[in-house]
Amino acid sequence: MNTSPMDPLLRNIDTVLNHGAFSPEQKEYLEGLFRGIAERTRYPFVGATPQGTLTAHPAAAPANLAAPETFHGTPVDELCKQERWKYQEHGLDCWDRILAHAEADRFPDEENTFRFRYHGLFYVAPAQNSFMLRCRISAGELTAAQFRGLADIADEFGNGRAAITTRSNIQIREIAPRNLVNVLIRLQSLGLTSKGSGVDNVRNITASPTAGIDPQELIDTRPYAHALHHYILNHRDLYDLPRKFNVAFEGGGAIDTVADTNDIGFVAVRLPEEGLRRQPPPAGVSLQPGVYFRVLLCGITGHKQLASDAGILVPPHEAVAVAVAMIRVFIDHGDRTNRQKARLKYLVDKWGLDRFLDETAKRLAFPLIRYPREACEPPPPPIRHAHIGVYRQKQKGLNYIGVLVPVGLLTTRQMRRLADLAEHYGSGHIRLTPWQNLLLVNIPDAYVETVKRAIVRTGLHYEPRHILGGLVACTGNTGCKYAATDTKGHALAVGRHLAERLNLDLPINIHFTGCPHSCAQHYVGDIGLQGVKVTLNGESMEAYNIVLGGGTGPDAAIGRLVFSGILASELPALLERMLRVYLERRQPGESFARFTRRHDIKQLQEMFSS
Image 1 (cartoon, rainbow, N blue to C red):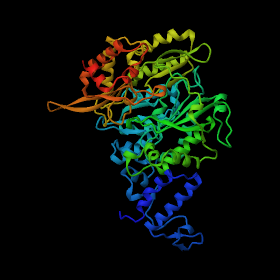
Image 2: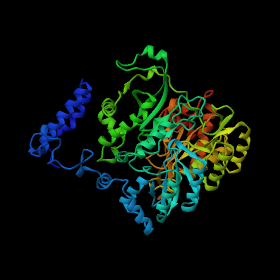
Image 3: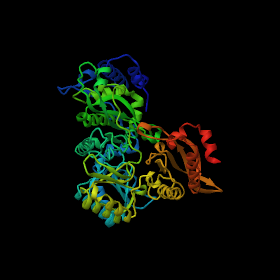
């Protein structure tokens, strides 16, 4: 494309506005002025007046009819391939394509592979020459009947198994193209959907797994997760993002929702009277003591970044509107030319936080409240591995039981048995967690031992200190073309090896991810492993890079790379040695993550290699 003398101005508008001492109103005026000048110089202006005449003056008409056609403000000829597909046809409008492929029992080409993911259908070749179904299960809540219905789908159309994901969701694999329509219709008959669960959409909305039943929670986050879920389902424009987008609601419960790994994390805090006295609200803003959400922005662990506090305080009833406004700012202004730079993080990096919040505020009928985090009381810290074991609920005489599901994999027999337990001994509800397991809720005291025994008879467990309960693993190369390693298989092998040889008195999380996308969020594990390929004697071998000392919530940190290219076959012995050294040299009550953080990388390598 030919350049204009005004191109440098276009490139520097954001820099000028973000570093100048301008009010929001001045920024808005100057931005429009600069862009109008630049656009007028770049392309001769031809506009239509309200009277139907043509004008050469930008002030007299809303748009330059002589400028190149754009898509969300980006010239069409600059769009990346996927954005051109979306420009030609909205991602949701592929039902006829799905129907045609099902009728012909045909696998899709590259474009249709992309499009079908808008309806949660993933063609996963070459790992598997079949489809995967990914659902949308807001707040991870299911009825026993829905869980049983998913088992039926897996049996009739899949491989007789299902997987719980790190977004409190369900995936079913090995679906033939002829069954695509059948699967979607059956899913809808259960009151569930898969719409928008893949590619450039807002992914499954997560909430505190123990919301509404947790004695320590500040707020029940389920209503907010469900409301945002349904708002998205009912608004077509929210299926047109530049890239994937994650939202979580953390209510301060016992189980960590890992909100700081999301693009937007709403984290409940308490605003005490003392905090208000110490830090009065901004002029014109009325605040009362109580529970609010603080907003975390731009978590993207595959890029080694946890979400950080945005400096705003949101009354809970305004949270969904704030989320939608932020998503729409991202839709309108995110990068559509380079998918490597298209996540929310890169828009905020480009603009600066203040401009992003200013653009969000323009879309709201109420002000965003800028208020310091230090004046708020943080939520109670989560309990490590509270997703496994028996815990009392806030409701008298009731308990939840966290079922250990190794790396999230369930047979349909296990699913049906768990659904039966939920119906016969609980309230008929099941909660999925971001730790790839599930909770049976509202179990009366009198039935706890019976349910524990029944869980063991299904081939699962409930013991909170079991090493297998700390394993998190992505799909791996048995079902994902991006993965370099068999993450779930290696995770189970490591877990069994360690469980037979070690007795840990403190929980530990070990995350296995197969590629740099970090779907298993390896950078926030106590031990994080990323799959890679190494060449040994001319042969390609599965191996892992190992990071140590990650964490989320109050213990948030990005793990540091300590070992590279460790063969998968060598992992069990190496991790056993690492944990033995930790047990021998730790300080009283010291977690593995904190132990590794007080040593530099060279010290860790020497300790764990000897």
